Image 1 (spheres, rainbow, N blue to C red):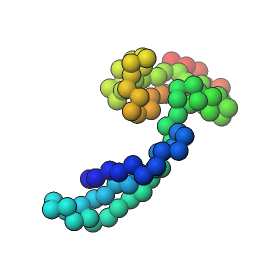
Image 2: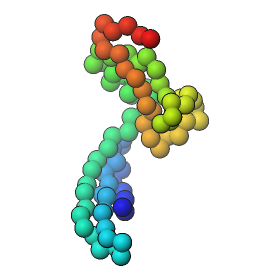
Image 3: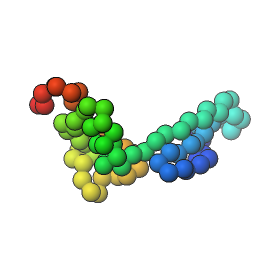
Image 4: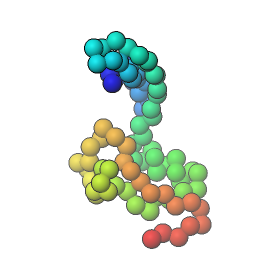
Length: 87
C-alpha cells in the first residue's frame, strides 16, 4: 500500500491509498478524508451530543493518555450516553 497526503485543511486530512502489485503496478486508488480533533474539541462535540467521556486511552493497548501521547492518531475514548452510569 502506498499512502499520499493530498491536502491538509484545518483539522481535515485528505489522502490516497494505492493498492499495487508487487512490482508496483497500481490496482486501485482510494481517496479518503479524515478529521483529527484535539481532545478539547472532541470533548465539546461529545458533550453537545449528550455524551461524557468515562475513560481515555493514549494508545491501542489502553495505555494512559498523557501530554506525551502520540498526536499522530486520535485518542481512544470510551463514551457514556446521556443517563448512563460510569464504571
